[in-house]
Length: 238
Length: 347
Image 1 (spheres, rainbow over the protein chains, first blue to last red):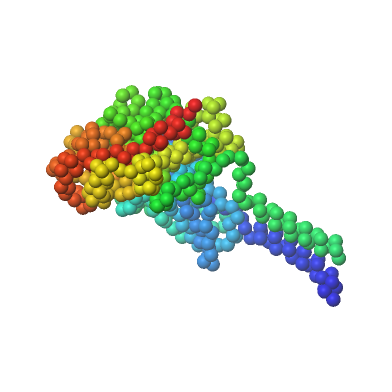
Image 2 (spheres, rainbow over the protein chains, first blue to last red):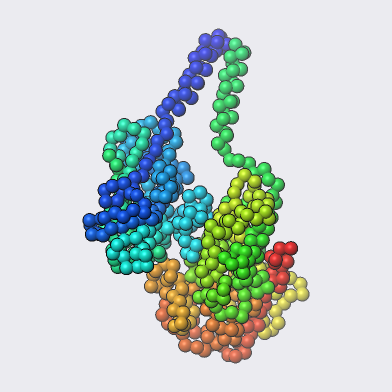
């Protein structure tokens, strides 16, 4: 009797098996998160002077680098996708690094995305790490263990330093002066599989006084206070 | 019926097979893993040996790197310049250590002894993991004054290193900074000292016993020094102040440089006393040329009371007592370690 049953069901069972496998792939997709650095409400271009009204000063940026880690996508149905090995160095000098490719995201409606701007304690206290966390990337302090979470360097007209240069290397993980910040972006309805995020430098420059403080390259209170502005730098681009 | 059943089963196993291709790559090399020996009664080391495979090949690469002066910007200074095996992997006769071009540093180089038990490195604990430690002197302006890009160029252009990295890490991966720093740390993790006279006496080995003076010194040590210099490592991972008056030419705040907390001002790590006879001068700035001066500080001299550690109690010791403590401290010298050919210049 069983062999007869099996005979009847073998094709549908096999068919269902294949269908199931195909369907799993149909419900997943590849998405991208595109970071769009801006200055004075326009796309940022390195090495070009930009007048910033709030500072009444012009700046020219040579370097903009920032760590984005621990990326989590929350869906409307309360489920979430947590990216594995989630640490990325976004570097204005390397435009491909501004785009994060996410593989096999469930094809559901996205409610919000969370990430950490910078590197958390775990990444800072592990052994020596590779990829975007390799010290060769120039975002690692060899003299005191810890990552530079956010690096911006450039010139400003009002700067009184040599070559009118300013350097902000904001880093450190030791409490109470940690400089990594969590943020969560509520995502408005989008039709494409790409999420664009404005990386607004104007917000950062609101908190620095380039005339008086031209360099910050150590851990401590100042770095920590500046890092409080990080979440305000990132908003969804609609 | 049999045919379609067979297709089903084969299909099932094929899918299973494909799902395993994302599994771990097997290490097919024939590298010899090196076990880490923990002496009986010692605490567990801080370094996670379960997570990291230390092999003869990674150790040898680290050893070659450690003794290579070309890692410094001008090819003059290797790690061994300040960290010499004969003197407990520090160097003697320098209050403040010096690097390339006769640049004088800000502190006395620390000995590297039993580092697997350390949770942080440097006098102020600025480095939180041994794998990261080599990068600090490599890039310090006063020490080896190199940069990571130049270092990689040198390593990648050397047939000797290409071969050594391949042997240590496999042929499908490039020479990198993490591999370099790791290899050096694997070598440093071999700097273990537990065969001093003291060690043999503690283990009741035949023909080894303290002299009367050494035994008295040990008793005095336990009463007066062991609150900070705890056995068997003769150090802790804590930062303390032992009341040294501030050297105004250096203005070295110690641990506060790392944490920015006022309560950490003037605190420095408690260094090990193992092989102390061979690692003069003493303290973070090398201000004491010999052990007599150290004991005079602890017993007779006025202390800077700011942030003075409460473990440090007044010591009432006679000159004879001081001598006996010094004689005991000399039993911490481990000639097997200081003369270990495996830790010396690679042949």
